[in-house]
Length: 545
Image: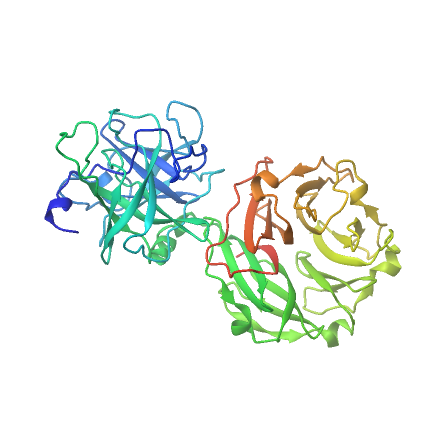
């Protein structure tokens, strides 16, 4: 690894300080600061290690944690672990009831370095995984770490501890770190870097001198440790964890500098690299906004070009693209389009658009034929208010009805329904519902079961969630600020994936995403890794391959 002396150090080591969890600046961290860190009990009392939740159902830790003799190497057989192994994730105080406990049921080791993926028996919910970094640490870089090992005065701590490190020598597969003492019980602990405000997993601790740890001679003052690098392993991680994937996907398109990008989030919660849509599906010039809907595994991307024309491209389940084509001859000419939105109707599509004064709707049948633009304003009636000009639009399908939402220039929000026979209901004003924001800047719809889910953002930065039930009544408004933050939102999208509600926003030039489970609980917000900087709009959809 890095030389005989350090490599020969007892391997059951890690990353720890003897005080409660601390941030790098010395301030106390919250209980969720290192929730992705796992405590591994191997063979009940045989061995203790630490690990990292890297996606919904997999941990990454040191392979030597499962070796017959960790001091002699890290060779481990793939498959079920030799000893019963229990993982506790997200429990800062081990004697509490927080976090989640899972059994490790499968190991997938690397052969070229001290790493192993550990499959959990069921997915973890409510804890944000730590993604593997795509780039190597550099010498002198500041890093952090967290683990459950021994401290300077506690043999078997019940508390997760954290510390700060400086990167030393970096080799092809490993790195040296020094700073906070690293002790027994921390093997497999995460070495964490922060890049552009986002935490990443830079490495996994494998060995240390253990200076300052309980049980070590006072003459041992060296606090250095060795860690295995994880950058460059995204392909191996994705391939090795594919056994837990389902056919469901979340797909996202985002506009950046009038260009269009696409990414996929799989059921393991891993995001794909953002790809340039126009490089794959042909250029349409400047892209103002885009909309996204899927029919089974085929993703339909509708883009409003800078020329005011609506274009359509499709992404096949195998990742290939069918080129953009203009829809003017099929939809008819509609001048002054400002925004568009699209939804899957099961076997077809429902498309809506707003101009400076009116709302329009069109459909695509299962054979791929589009209807001409229909004037929703004529069918439903004009919007009301001091300035009723439509500014934003959203659409969602629930059963055989299409739900359309509009935000006006002055921030009022309206909702109507298109029935299966093509008739329309009346406008209902969402901003008049008790508890609704008085002024809205963006809104997005998605359907779950028989209910309509909606996210509304306020110009001042508030983010609200509400549901409309099948009987036409509305739920109380919920506040998503604790999950997504309170900064102004410039774009919002919504989608249903496997009957769970997803929403994504752009705030402060960054994409944030969260999901609501069927039981009403929300996941912590995550930021898609590698998303282009300063996106201006986004749209999301659920697909099934």
